[in-house]
Every structure is written in structure tokens, then in C-alpha cells.
Image (tube, rainbow, N blue to C red; front, side, top):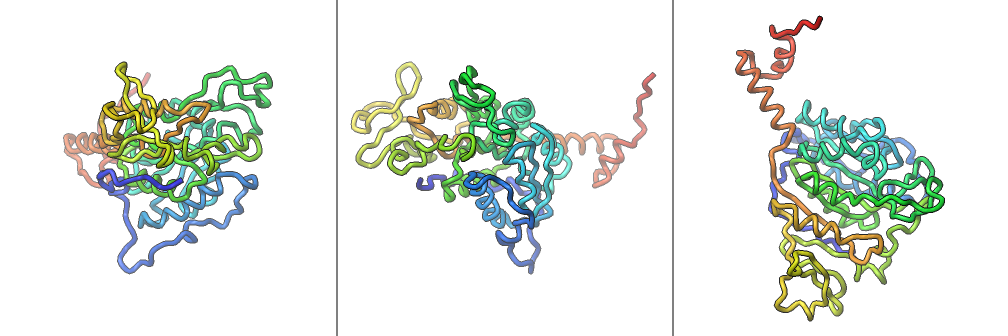
Length: 364
């Protein structure tokens, strides 16, 4: 798949408060971000490709390793912190966004990342995920979606298609699966994107855009599980079929799929719905032009709904990238205001002074 992520004109402010490498310090390399731990995933797992992309991308940030933190929950993807030579925490099931929120709020000098899976984030961790997104905490969330529980040996997950036969659904799942992008957009996430493990260039560009975003950046990564759900995304990975199915989202350009000789474009119907039609039939019809910076998430939500179990049309790229005050910035402003109004010094000891001040409560 050709890379189609573009510069949206948004400021590179996701790590604005994080100290960069000092003058005279040598630039870091992929090797500097590779830990000495043995990588223990199944052969052929898509996690390997994502790990390599992240390790190769992190030096671009120009940050010191001690100012980068990866927080994970439980699952195969959640072993990520072991394999990166940064600070990290392998936390508890579904709670990585909550821990990351505390870090981002208390330590503006950190670049905080969350690595999670479809089971970890969307089942027991669902509440933590949506509230981190709606609050717009300055963290970057990478959700690995393989549509299965891998670590616990192949049970169906919140993204498994209806009818999926697994160890826990021997007669087929009767649940309606989550669409992670629709969920994130419904929670008013300010940055929402999708990429996949096997497209290194596109994955890296999406990571770059997510890291540049100040606020909650949510990236869904389609990731193959070769043991329990092998080939789940083969239709969009196979070169003979992907061109007709992949919808490459390019900011400011028509939403389209297919090859140059057999292109389809997305048009808006009179009832407000959207549908693909052959390019030759689109003349005079309202063709959808992708605007990732639209503050109204309605159009981005419609794009997220194009994807279904048939994978007839699968959008890839940045769905939304808007600017809104971050929760952690606002919390720190409130603390500074409270300290100042109390007549206490507004320096690094301000919070300590507030907590140890004269205002106390007696509980009987």
C-alpha cells in the first residue's frame, strides 16, 4: 500500500514540553531504543513489524529516552514496554489509559504512549479508553486489533465478527462487534487514525502524525495473529485485491478506491448517506472531499462506517485531527491558579504546598 498520510498543517506540539537532546549529544538510533530483552511473540506475529516500526521511528522525536514512557495493559501487545529501552510499565488489564492519564497530568516533561489490544482496551478497559479520549489527555494510544484474544489462547474479542467460531464461541459469536474508530470518534477524540502492521511506510507516517498531535491521539493498527486468527486482513494485504478495497484517506482530496483504470469515488446521497460509484458516474454529484480538520466529527464517523466484515471498502489514514485544549494542561492551570490565589509560591513546590497547606478536613 502506498503511503498517503499528508501534513495537515497542525503544529508539531505533541511533545512541546518534553526536553529534547542537548547540544553536542549524538542523535539516537533504533539500536538505542532496543532493549536487551528476548522478544517473545509467536513466529509471524504482526507485533514484530509494529515494534520494529516504533523502534525505528522514536529517534525522530529527538527526545531523551528517560523522557519517553510506554504504558501497557494485559495481552500480547502489552509486552511492548519490555522491548523498548525507555521507561515503561506493564500494568493491569484495561487500566493503561488511566495510568497514562496520571503520568501525563503530573509530568508534562514526558512523552506518554499507551500500547493496548482490542480485548484489553475495548472490554474491561472500555471505560478508561473512552474517558481518556473525551478528556483529550496528551497521550498517544496504539490499539493493536487482531479481532481475537491471543494471549489467553483464542477466545472471541469485542472486535470479532458475528458468527466467529472460537474456543469460547464454538457455535459462533452472537455479539455485534465494536468499530474502534467509530467508538473513538463518538468519544470526541481529537486525533483518530488507522494503519496496519504490514505497511511500514504508512505505519511510520501515521505514528509521526500521532506523536505530533497535542492531545489524545488514537491509532488503530490492524495486526495479524497467525495462531488464532490468521489471515483476518488478507483481503487488504493481498496485492491482487487490496487496490479495490483500500480507501486511502488524503486530506483535501476526494475519497476514492480502486486503480486508475477502475476507480470509484465516494459521493453523498440526498438522504445524507455516502456510497461509492464508478468515477465516470460521479459527474455532477457531490463527491466527498476528505477534511481531517473538520471540527464536526460527522463526516469522519461516516467514513469509519464504510468498513464492515466483507472488507469491501476499508479506509486507511487519518480520519480526524483537530485542536482542543488538553485535559492535563487545564488541570495544571487550575492547580497553578489555586496556588496563586492562596498566596503560595507557584513553582515546582506549588502542589506540595497546596496539599500540605492550612485547609484541612476532620472526618468523624
